[in-house]
Length: 245
Image 1: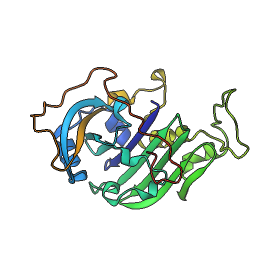
Image 2 (image 1 turned 180 degrees about the vertical axis):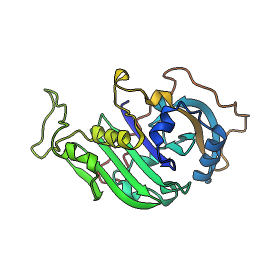
Image 3 (image 1 turned 90 degrees about the horizontal axis):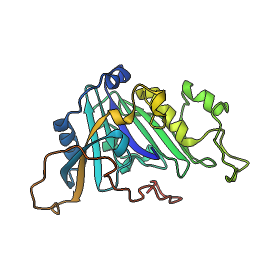
């Protein structure tokens, strides 16, 4: 997966066990949360997909997977240069114990992650290979090997390596946070893991300006064919902006 922009709301002591249990996503709960988060929009269901194909949505859509004790929201609003600027509504909409943000774009060599506990900020990080964009809170134990240079950047011969480059690739750093918290990797190969993003169903919703949703009747949520989602360049880099747009 070249990019992801996700928020996780966790209220179970063992999210890894839940996700590995081949749980079904709850479309009713997903629709209710979409309406809560985007009440200033007309929200319409359009498909059921998987996290593997829907983790980096366009700005006019959101994908939500509600499982027992945890929920994932795939939204462009999570692609933040500074994760601490996440809107309060998105920090803790479900009164969950933990909120995790994991976002990255491999083409830009950018990655970010953040953690809130009961709505209280604990840790955030965001960087490119050269520039640290945000580094707040106390580093966690699992980060040590990255800062120690044990996960070097996979430089190619045509890459221009800057002298001040970080000792790790930011997307890998963000993906390691996801693995630590949720037990799977976006960037792992299929042979490396028991659980992949393609195993997790999410419900998709289109976001229309209020009062501008089409009048026609919407079909029930239906699982899409392979590679049907459009990719419109969600992550064009704008230096100095709050968001990776």
